[in-house]
Length: 489
Image (cartoon, rainbow, N blue to C red; front, side):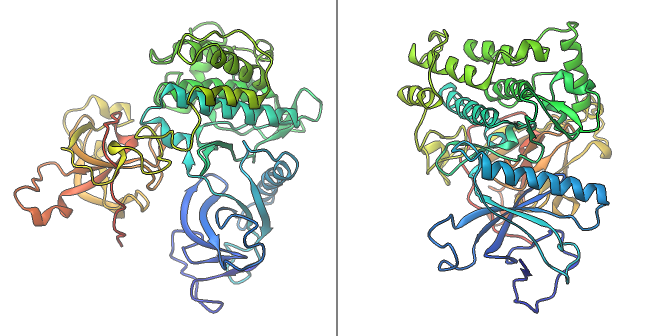
């Protein structure tokens, strides 16, 4: 597969461009339309089929996600790790396909000798999702919607485990929401095959906030570290808590390492498990079982058994006090039980999540509503108690929420921890921002600049507003959606 720029085969590459693949670049049968997000090993772009009548037209999706995994410039060991991660993604896509796993459409290696930064990059073409579970958490999720999401995650995990795989990196960012509103598990680059029947081996990597206690001290052998299905169950327990706690982490600490230390204290019996007060009783019990401190105590709680408990609870009554006794049901039965309670539908998201359609009045663009206030939050603890407005503790407001949140995309006006700003609307899918404590979100609020009064000078309205990343506030006011911001340069 060759890479072609937007100007055709002879177009020059802009070496100063910050994106690996600018919009308009062609990758085989696909054209890059916009960046979606980036991680440690890959960058994901939205793409569309280059020609509606091209090969396979009508047989596959026209809107896709392109996962680009560069290998150039890496040390041989790093390049092998990237290739191995891609191999696992492809193998699961081929051998373990399921409605609750993101669909792999194609894979290839780029041949771009004129662009060394792209030459040899691995490309995975996947179905495009509407967003991730992480996008939904900050606004709050109704219990019925949360039940549907968690049942979908359990169904995906149960299938993976039956197929002989452990996900090994379950977290809200890797739980995608498809265009049909259903869950799709994604990102299998760290997945481990259960070669022994009880465990597999994988690289000593993972997202620190979702590692089970035993992984923090797991010995590194010739094949890597041992990985068991119970690791996915631990991560599921943390996800359940976040679903019903508006994304708040369960374990205390300002950084992932500090929260990992809290996990060890809990596993050693020196600290209790303290869940947020808003987690409903049934889900609190389910999460507690998932978070048993040892693998041996956790192994009885499989994804399938958890799904059966959810089905039994729904069959016994849709309210919070439905019975939780075990009931032998299939995964499909569990989802049907949820549907009977009104938890499944094509338009379950209102303001509380990514809208499946236009939603209600509270979700519509342009709804007349006075501004609501948000309080600025700085994740740096040393800045939270200061009142001297020290420059090193100031935070920036963005000019354009669709561009990277960097120095060249902020207004001159600075804000500080505990400042109160007026917000008039929200954007759910802007540029991703990660704060100092590794909280990640694509959610933004349009705010009025401190001291600005658009009523006094209506012509200056555009200059009187800026954008606050949602990771810079703990508030989630019920604001209407913002119209798509005009592109800036």
